Length: 201
Image (cartoon, rainbow, N blue to C red):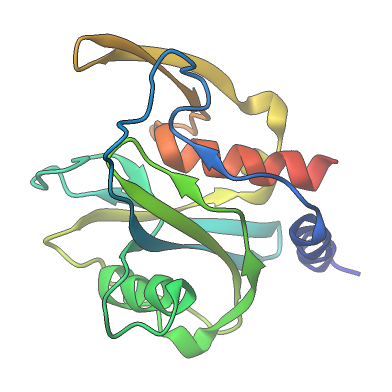
């Protein structure tokens, strides 16, 4: 069995494990959620491509011109539209729009528990494997760069650290898993750490 095939098996086993939902509030017990908050469903795609060195996760660097989260590292994805039958369809549609990934090229393995963001989104991470060659086409208004992160990096809990920064006058803690010039943090890192915990269990 190839390394990539073995890693795919570990993803399937990880998706079978049970764990609770996560949120941007996990590391901030004193940061109470607003009682009147409205959560908007969203889908993000964690798509892994196969290489001779194993699986690699497709990630994006958001455009620095965006109003929200400029320059941050993120999964392809976004808010669920009324025309989307479910959040998996949302994640696949958004990936096609943002990085030119054809939905039919993705074998969906399953979903991770929802993640609530401090900005009011309920994100469902969809895990998939690319089953066809893929040449990224970044949507210039949203995506500055498309890159990949090795499976071994993002699924190793030891690579994650808790850091903090000031946000709206308070100290906010978050997970980070830097990779070379890419600072992967916030909701993206929290979701990936949840996956890492399942893979290593």
